[in-house]
Figure 1: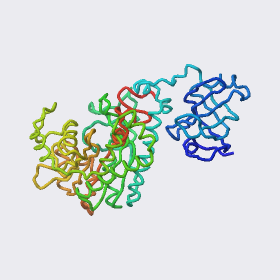
Figure 2: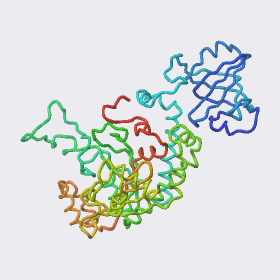
Figure 3: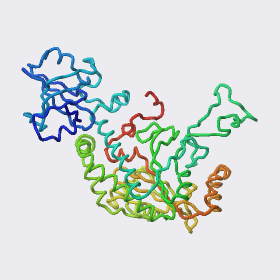
Amino acid sequence: MNTASVKTILTMTGSNQTLTVDGWVRTKRESKGVSFLELNDGSTIKNLQVVVEAAYPGYEDVLARINTGCSLSVQGRLVPSEGAGQTVEVKAENITIIGETPQDFVLQKKRHSFEFLREIAHLRARTNSFGAVARVRSAMSYAIHSFFQERGFLYIHTPIITGSDCEGAGEMFQVTTIPLETVPLVNGQVDYSRDFFGKKASLTVSGQLEGETYALALKNIYTFGPTFRAENSNTSRHLAEFWMVEPEMAFCNITGNMDTAEEFLKYIFKYVLDTCADDMDFFDSRISKGIIENLQNIINSNFERVAYTEAVDQLLKAGHSFEFPVKWGIDLQSEHEKFLTEKIYNKPVILTDYPREIKAFYMKQNDDGKTVRAMDVLVPRLGEIIGGSEREDSYDKLVQRIRENDLNPDDYWWYLDLRRFGSVPHAGFGLGFERLIQFVTGMQNIRDVIPYPRAVNSLDF
C-alpha cells in the first residue's frame, strides 16, 4: 500500500487508489451520517479532506477521540471530491490515532495573533502562516546554494567564535569560561590569559574577514551561517542571532560585485515564485497584498545604479519633509531608501561611493579621499537588502583605516597579511537572510521568519 504526502495526493488524478496518509488534524466537521477531517502533514499549505462515514466501525467512539492537533494514520480510497475546494478526497477505511490532543488544545480553528504565537514557538509551525514561512525559508536556502554552486563558488564554513570585530561596532557577545563570580583581574583589567583561548573571544558578527582568506586562494567563495549581534534593540527589525549570506570574489571590482548581487536576488525571487506558488498565494492574499507582483517587477527590472552624492541631491530636490533631514555625509535612513526606490526611481537602486566616515574600515578608498567603493542594494518597501563593497587591497591604506577606527592593527595581523602576500582587487557583499525572507513573504516582524527568535529578553525555547 502506498504511503504518500498530502502534496502528492492532491496532484493525483486516478480515483479508487488505495493509499495511506499520515498527518495532523486541522479541523473536524461533523454532519448527519458523515464527518470530514482536514488533514495536513506540512508538505503543503493545503489540507486533504478525509471522509469518515457513519458506517465506519466504532464511528462515534473514534470521532470522539479526534480533536484538532491529534495525529492520525489513515488508510482509504482516493475518490473525486463532491465538495468545493479540492478535486480529490480520501474515504477512510482504517484510522489509527497515533497521538491524541485535549479539546482545549491551544491551536484551535480560530486565528491567533503573531505575538501570542511567539510565546508558543514550539507549536507555531503547525499554523498556516508559520508552515508557509518554513517552506519558503527552506526553498530560499536551497536557491542560495544553487545560485553559487552553479557558478563555481565554494561553500566555506567560517568560525562562529572569533577574536576580531568585523564591523568595529563592539556589539558582540562575549564567549568565556572564566567564572563570573571570581573574575581574575590584573591592574583592574580582566586577565584574559586565564580564559579558554588566552584572549578575549566573541561570537562572530560576520564571516567576511575569514571568508576573504579563502577567496584570496580559491577565487570565488561564499559563507552561509549564523551570526550574532548584541545590539540592545527590542524592535521588529532586530535579532540577536540571525543568518548571513556572504560571497567574496577575488579579481573582482565594485561593478562585478553589483552585477552578482542583482543576479543573485533575481534568481532567488524567481525560484521562490516557481517552487512555492501555493505558499506565495497565501502570503499575497493573507499577509501582504501585491507581494507577488512586487517580486515579479524586481525580476523584470534593471536595477538603477546611483552614486551616494547624486542620491542625496535627488532627495534634497524632491522637497519632501523627512523625519531625518537629508544632508551629505549622513547614513541614509530607511525612509530615504524607500523614497529613492518608490518615488524617484520606481525600481530597485544600487547606491555606491558612500562617505568613508560612515562605512567600515575594510572598504576600498576612492581617489577623492572622501568616499569608498561601497554598494548598498535598495528595494521598494524595505530599503537596504544587501550591503557590500570592493575591499581595500592596499596594506598601508588598510592599516591607516584600522587605526582611524580606533582598532588595533595587531588584532588583524592575519587579515593584513592578505595584503602583503599576493594581494588582488576583490569584493563581496552580505545579505541578512531573515530580512530577505521578510521581504519575500511580507511578514512584518523579523522574529516571525526564523524558527526560534533570539532577541532582547527572549531565550525561552
